[in-house]
Image (cartoon, rainbow over all chains, first blue to last red):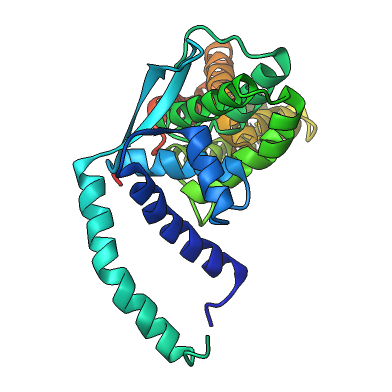
Length: 111
Length: 203
């Protein structure tokens, strides 16, 4: 039965990807800001887990990155959602509510 | 990649270690990851963070790279690829060469008995040179096998060295045992030029 730590990790990783896309929907954001937001929401255990995720989203064409000048004058890497990324998170939104309700119902709904 | 890095030495060393441990990744993927970490460290320091604390928060470079590789390839990095298969074939060919030379009659001697009859005797290389010569025959086998035990950049560099060593062995021994290892040397040289299918290609 697939209910071990690796399965839960993969599930969380998949969900966090959509959360990152949702955070980028409003405006491009730099890595540290994203990492801190995800940690505050307890979506990632450590800041370092964000960057492989962002690299994966970029290679999938859902996110793009570019260097911009920060207020300190030093280059800072910004991440922005692409049109494909917007489509992906929109599709996820449509599915998530019904999926969440179905899982809650199956698990007993005793929340 | 950022051109002007003003990161403290510790941070640069951390990044270089991560980069080295990510040798198995597609170069573009690796650059994206390292750039992300570089920017993160720079931003954290600019926000008033201490470099030691920032690096401690990220984790050891080995652990970070291992997690990144695991995230990219949940099943683990692929060991068997076209290049590796060619190298295995190369090892098999060196073993075959050694085996052939061990049993193939290589020397012929003609003796004449008292009645004038000629007797032709053949001997193998080992019979003439002694069983210890087997060690010489097995050297190319051991050399060809070395890359099979390595991964990442060490594997790539060693593959080139091994191919060059086998080629040299063939050239220097062209008039004797070297030519038997020619097929293996050719395969090892071809293996150098076979691109390794990186993780996440064609995704």
